[in-house]
Image 1 (cartoon, rainbow, N blue to C red):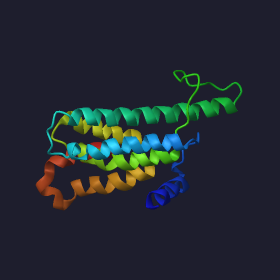
Image 2 (image 1 turned 90 degrees about the vertical axis):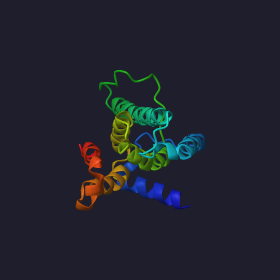
Image 3 (image 1 turned 120 degrees about the vertical axis):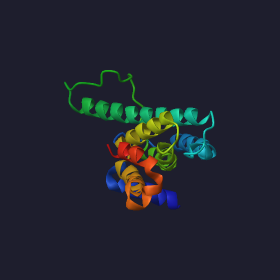
Image 4 (image 1 turned 60 degrees about the horizontal axis):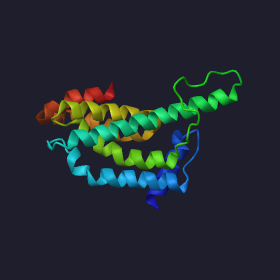
Length: 176
């Protein structure tokens, strides 16, 4: 019930996807994706140097990029249909499936904390992929990403973070 209220609140704050969607199959797929990343949570810890960590972060980054791309296509497709002679997206498929706001909210809610941990990873590739994925998620749910990422970045740049000076460049990269 708490998740449903959070999703409804996100939609009320302007995070709803313009194309709609969000059917039962859409949400069940989002739940399965969330379950996958929930089981991989320990591998996102900044001190974890497992060989599967870069692969999990790459999967998360690709998922964020594809969701962002689908959002852009569906938005361009909807605008192109409204204007009879308006341009259609150049690389969009013939049919653009909708991505429900509930599904985006579920997946983003699961990925944001993991990617924030990944930003401070010792592995520079994991750090860069995590920051890029967060930026892609910010295109979809800006309020949700900002509400979690900004306090995280500010704490890494604050006075009490002197013992964790290695986190400052990653935090600055997040803000850019």
